[in-house]
Image (cartoon, rainbow, N blue to C red; front, side, top):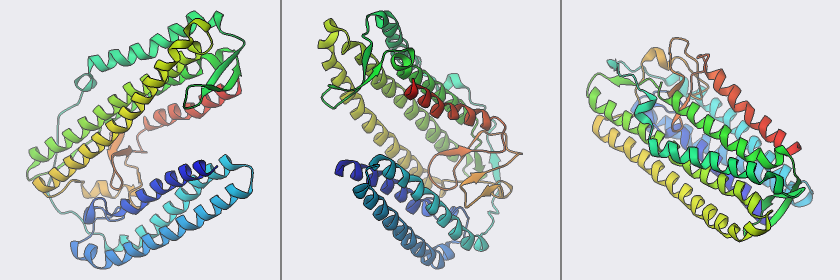
Amino acid sequence: MLATILIWLLVDAVVMTSFVWMPVMRGCEAFFGVRVSEDFYRTEGRALLSRYRFWLLMLFVEIEAIGVLVSLYRAELPLARIASLPLVVLPATILYILFYRQVKPFAVSDEGRFASTLRRRRLSEYTNVYIEAAVLLLTVTPLLFLIYYYPQLPERIPVHWDWMGRPNGWARKSFASVFFLSLMLVYLQGLFILVKHGLLTVKMTLPAERAEEYLRGKEEFLSTTLRLMDWVRVLVSLMMSALLLNVVFTSVEHLRHLTVFVLIVDAVSTILLIASCAYFIVRLFKIDRKLKQAVGRVYVQRGRDAQHWYAGGLFYFNPEDPAVFVEKVVGFGYTFNMANRWVYVYLAYMVLLPLLFSWGMTK
C-alpha cells in the first residue's frame, strides 16, 4: 500500500512541477503565455509568479493529504489514488488561467520583421529503414508466434507476471485475452506514425535577422524529437513483444525455460527507454539553449498568430494556419491547432485506445 501511495504521489508531483515551470519556460517571451516587457517580467511578474507558486503548493498539499487519507482508511486504494491526478490537473489549470488573466493587460506586441521557410518536409526524409524494419519485425513475429501456438494454449492462460516473471494474473483463453497486447502494439505504432506525419506540417516562423541560423536550430529540434519517437517505438515494441511471447512461454511446457529471456529483455528495454528519453530531452534543452545564445530567442510568432492562443497559451485555434501541430507557447514540444479539421482524425484515433483497452479487459 505504501509503495502505491508513493508512486502516485510522485506522478502527481511531476505533473505539478510542470505547472510550476510552464509560466517561465520561455521567460518574458511567453510569461503565462503572454509576451511581456523585460522590466515587468523582472519586477511585478516575479511577485505574480511567487503568488502563483504559493497557491499551487497549497493546492498540491491539500489534494495529496486528502488522497492519502482516503487511501489509508478506505479499501478502494487504486481508485482513490488515480482520482487524485485529475483533481490536481483541473484546479492547477484553472489557477494558471486566473494568473494569465492578471498578466494579459501587460502584453506587448512583437514589432519585429518575420520570414517563413518555403521548404516542404517529406516523411521519407525522416524515416530510417533499419528502424522501420525492426519495428515491423517486432510487431509481426510475436503475432505469428501466437497464431501458431494458439491451439496448444491451455484454457486458462497467464496475462500478468510479477517482477520475477511468475504468473500472478490469469484469464480464460479467448481471442481477446491472447491477442489483445498484439492489437495494442499495432495500434500504438499507428499512433506514432500519425503523430510523426503531423509534426512534419509544423510551421516555423523565422526572425528576419539571422533567419537561416534560427531555421537550422529549429529543424534540429524537430528532427531530434522525431528520433526520440523512433527510439520509443522500437523499445516499446521490444517490451510488448517480449510480453506477448511470454504468454506462450509460460503456457507451453517445453518453452518455459525461455521465460528468463523475457525478464532480461524487459529489464534491458526498460533501462534503455528511460536512458534514451533522458538523453534526448537533455539534447532538446541544449538545442534550445544554443539557439538562445546564437539568436537571442527560441520562440518567434507573428502578432496575428499570437492572437489565436487561448487560456494562457494552452490552446491554439487558428483557421488561417494550415498546420496540424504548432510549437507550444508554454510547456515543451508541440500541440494541436484545433481549427484544423485533421486534428479531429487524430483525436478520433486516440479515442480508440480506451475503447480497445476496455474491450480487452472485458473479454
